[in-house]
Length: 256
Image 1: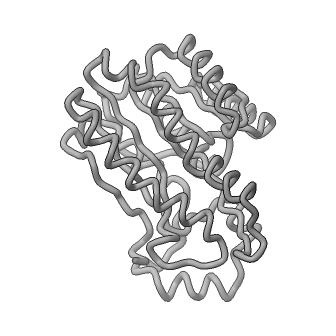
Image 2: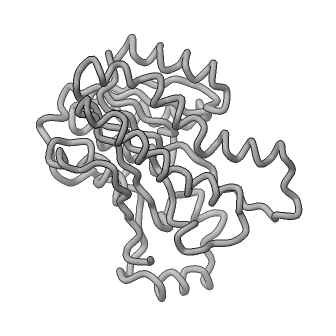
Image 3: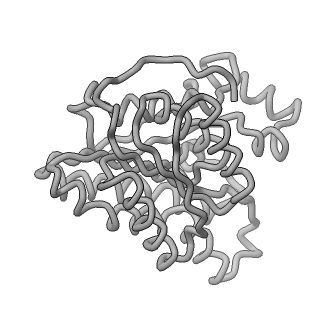
């Protein structure tokens, strides 16, 4: 993890932050950025080895973060992990629903079971995470829920229809939460990343041809990295964004 830079938001110090998919990629960067704010951070991930490294990397910087190992598609296990995390960090003030998996698939090969699995991986857990922490936020009359979507459905990307269907649903889900819980001063927003250069994306999808297309279509002629998303996430969670809710924020370098 490179040196983390950016603004410090004093109101985030001591806030209890729960992050899904914090063991790698964008989620890992989000964990580091909230820990730098001196928030009380817990994250959930299925990859124990990678997640323990995130905990160790944070400890080396003097930050304490808590990790819960869980398969997010197992809702009973997810609820148990959230309950365990709450015992460590306290009632949740900020929820970051980051976990997802953009596996490619041909329409002809999709079974009902695979379709359900893609929705379980990419949106179902977002609902049940929010459900698990909403009473904390209502009791505090304050909270932030940030749901990660994707620009893939906005640009009309093919080759993963179940994924793009699930990610387009994130916006509708988010706006419903914002409407229902705004009366409790709970802000709910969606964040839609463009093509972010995580290790996974680089190893699986980045080719000279795709990089050329990226540089052609993006307004900004540079690769976007996980920190670009983490900085926006931290800002939206802070009181600097206290009037922001019920919206989707696109972080894609100007592709769409």
